Amino acid sequence: MASPTLDQKSAKSMKQDLFDHPDFYAVDGLLTEEHKLIRSSIRDFVKRQISPYIEDWAQRAYFPYEIVKKFGDIGAFGPTVPTEYGGGGLDYISYGLIMQEVERGDSGMRSTASVQGSLVMYPIYKFGNEEQRKKYLPKLGSGEWLGCFGLTEPDHGSNPGGMVTNFKDMGDHYLLNGAKMWISNSPKADVAVVWAKNEEGRIHGLIVERGMPGFSTPETHGKWSLRASTTGELVFDNVKVPKENLLPGKSGLGAPMMCLDSARYGIAWGAIGAAMDCYDSARRYSLERIQFGKPIGSFQLIQKKLAEMLTEITKAQLLNWRLGTLMNEGKATTAQISLAKRNNVEIALEIAREARQIHGGMGITGEYPIMRHMANLESVLTYEGTHDIHLLILGKEITGIQAFV
Figure 1 (cartoon, rainbow, N blue to C red):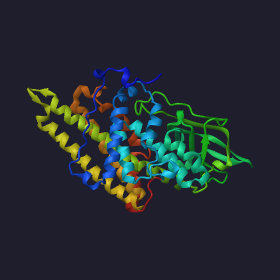
Figure 2 (cartoon, rainbow, N blue to C red):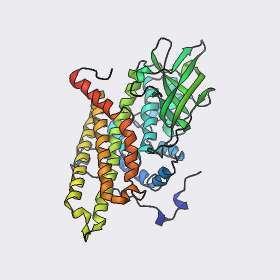
Figure 3 (cartoon, rainbow, N blue to C red):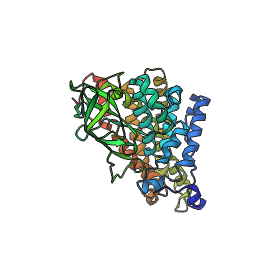
Figure 4 (cartoon, one colour):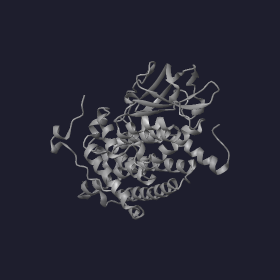
């Protein structure tokens, strides 16, 4: 069923997006004019193409497939991939700002975009050959094709090295068998970057295309989180994969981990977009809601909540900016990215919970974005490395001892 358009709904029924981002430490002064222009264009896009519909999409667990082409049109796919391959040719702070604005609209929408850019386009660009780059990247960048990333398995989440999905060399092709789970974009994906073990147990990336016999993408239903994105499985039953679809540039677990670093970086920015939206809504509501004859924003406990929200958002903004500069210089480490992803998602979820309290009973309704953000962030806390795994990545960095092997 098609999603309603602006023309099909009266202006009265559409809740206006009045978002105004907080910038208490004048972080905008650290951004270039290009950064601010990119952020402004994505923010306008979100206000026009996502905010008016997102509550309805989430309530109906509806993924608006038409958003894929629209994301391509505005450059949300593969912002750091060179323009000659259909990317944006932008720096990492630009990429972060794009993810921040899209997730301010919805975490599921950001998942769609960041999977396409960081987990599909990035490995094809980084580990693929020239023929693969020219074949796949322009169509992925434009939104003509949607992609997904197959790493997580039903029995191997935080331990991806234990994967059982495998492929065998059959002479003129590879034979792929196995399954992946919790895969964003999979039910609608045209291509999947799949990680599997060869006969020697070495992990490689393979590009699997929809329509290959034995390849199916069952959809995951009944989600309470990320309801406006599409999630599913990848099932491989003797799938014949052409040999030219093997990514030749890198093998081993380090290859998908590099992709995850890029995705986690985007999440660190995106989560703050959700936090900003919750804070802005709570601040606005606290000035409108009257109790005991005055706005609830005049009470000490409400001001405490708002002050703590703003403090954490400000710290995270500075953290993201510094991490972005390190990414631009090629100096950011996995542990630094883990720290930002872990911290920013945690504080975003806490801000969503506090904002829900400020909104009172209204906070659980679709009249405000709070409960949707809160439910979404529960997934963001877990995917691309769970909250506790990122803690242990930092622990290893501190002590030199691996705690989860």
